[in-house]
Length: 154
View 1: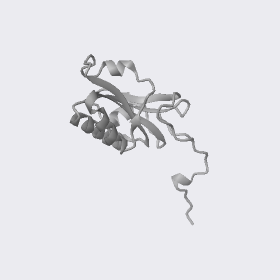
View 2: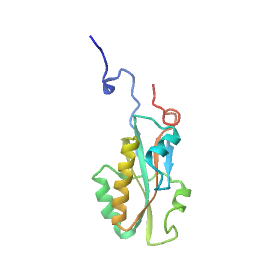
View 3: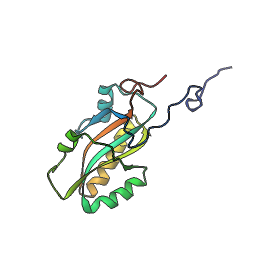
């Protein structure tokens, strides 16, 4: 008889899921160039985890559009991430000096692979562009000490 275990029935102790806004989260991989494929960014960082991580998108939006965008992304499980965002990412954004725009970090907890990351980047970019905003960058975060460069825990 063949015996195998389903991944969700592992006897190993599972780490608790990360929480959006947790100050112990560290950036594992990030990007500000929308032309770089998600698979390339993840591969260059050596990220190959199947565990849930925090996916954060930094966006610039007109102040008048913030409520509508938050309502739409909230339905998909995103929340505003109040943790500090890398100032270099914000400075690289479009119209960084424009007072009519505000910078927000939208984040959710989910397992990330190249396909999931590409899909989420496209969804956020679409929602934000319809509100006349722009995506500044994205990042995958996990708790400090959760493995090296995205390697799965054993």
